[in-house]
Image (cartoon, rainbow, N blue to C red; front, side):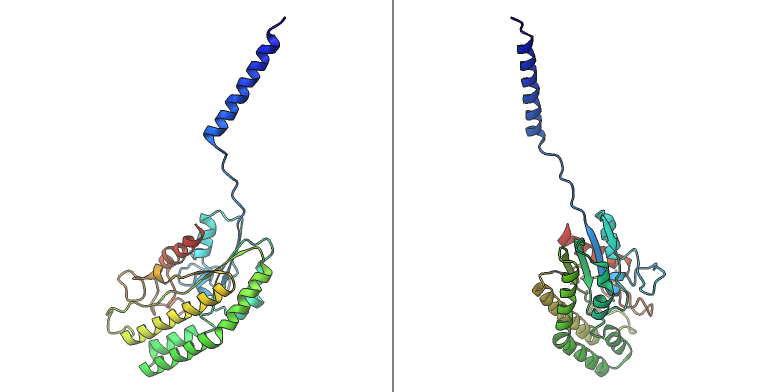
Length: 266
């Protein structure tokens, strides 16, 4: 009787056992990463005002903003960037959400500051009297607690409707100021304090509405701590530019906003 069939069978069995042992020792291969289809919505704090250089649109979009930086670093499968300087909640609802679809997997947004009159309040405090500043801040605070929550709810609901499969990440605004002395041309400590307190209130309200919408809120204040206007290493512009004033610079978007976003996305 020939031993060849037996030999072939033993060889095949040895090969099978070797392959199985190798699979156990090496483990499964790397899983294919899920596609990330990312859309960045919002106002100037998303479009990148302060970072420059800007695209040719009126929205002042910069590739140094946190959104394109994140998309590049994470190899996003697709990236849409309709965020626009000066945007309010109605602009997100009426214009920007057209970039969303059922295929969108991640959405970020900063919104609400312009609804609350960010520019007018800062202008009143920078160039007006203490009384003028206090009144402007108090009006903004009343708006933030009374009117803004409904606008945020509508905005987040619209995003959810247009991108039902996406993770919604709402990023807040930083405190703008450090409270140390920084020259006689700077705003008073009192003005800077009440503006920071208004930023805290806006963060609290935004975080609450984001939670109610099932979104992830990212508090950027800790990431900018020690780097506001009047810091030795500021990441926020002072009154040096009309358009860029009181917006993050390129370091602020990279080390503040990008770091904050990465803290919740990995």
